[in-house]
Length: 487
Image 1 (cartoon, rainbow, N blue to C red):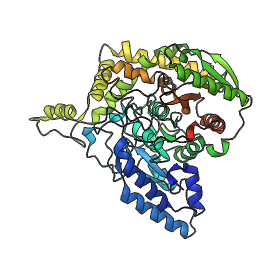
Image 2 (cartoon, rainbow, N blue to C red):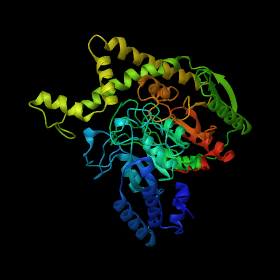
Image 3 (cartoon, rainbow, N blue to C red):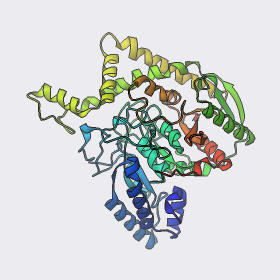
Image 4 (cartoon, helix red, strand yellow):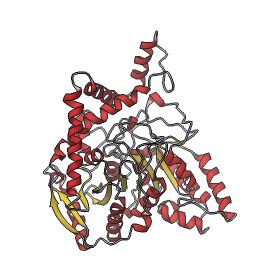
């Protein structure tokens, strides 16, 4: 039996029944990572000694009859903008190259309590700013289905690791599509929870009103299991919600009969890749067969989402990244002659081109004379977009769309054209602006054997419906069971 092909839920069950030991699982994934990661650059660091020690401790506790957590012995990859105590947290940036986190993020603390094995930290676009994981200071991550192509971004390392079965689960962060877009490119499930469902304490901030931590997995059951563990109110994050956390795994099988699904015409544009359109229409027919009702709807302000996002997100980033000044932590220039030069040179040497571009965009939008013209107006349009979703959800229970307009593109194909890169997130950004949950589900492959995914958007805090829809779709299809052969 190849342990690395098992789902997270299967691994946890077998460990609790003592059919498998946590040490066996850890060794299997570490061995596969050692042979495969050099081809992908999905992991920036692998915590081999810590993982083996944690697995042995878990086996000892289970042998003594002690209860094991929901994720007992399940390896999890962690995006390297989430703090793990005594482990480097670099955000794939030279400015944080040697920063070791002094504390655990809330999601990490919860994972440890659930018995998960934190196998390593994964690559990302620097400070989560990008759609391809080409903006990392530590090299490009590759798509396991075709290593000449990107895995998406910014959580490309986490998506690549799960798709290649270097971990059955991973955490990413999603500010404008950074979980769902790479999930689609890599043929796995990627869920962005409702804003506030999961604590952001210990997540290095990009755009604080948009960021959200969420799971990557092979299937709906694993996503439900992980989301249940990491969700809930956190006194360390004032934006986290105190709404009760449903038992997501239990609610997976609720029937879809009578469920109303909306198809927004603004997402099915002529520029949409023909194969993606066909695969999504196939998925719609499966939902109709399962008893769901499908109707056309309109979200007319979708066209403004990219423009709004690229004012608001860089504005928040310019404020959040002001803390990297070479004084308290992170890179400090050795060439500076005075304090001002130290600030300037430390930031110039530490930040990459895309981060600098967004800091400048944001600073400009917030500057005197332009605040009302750009930032203030963008906030008003964001409110309109959110209200459009509220109105749509009075007619339908969920909204089904493409996740991305094209399959995974070639490494370097869009690097010289930032606007084309930004448009990769055209279908995912509205979800973050509105603060609602969204999930990407694998639904087939192109003629070039590249994965295709569709996106489901739900009502605030209704992740249960998204996960149930994913579960039922996957019960009728086998796309999620395919494993890439990394060459």
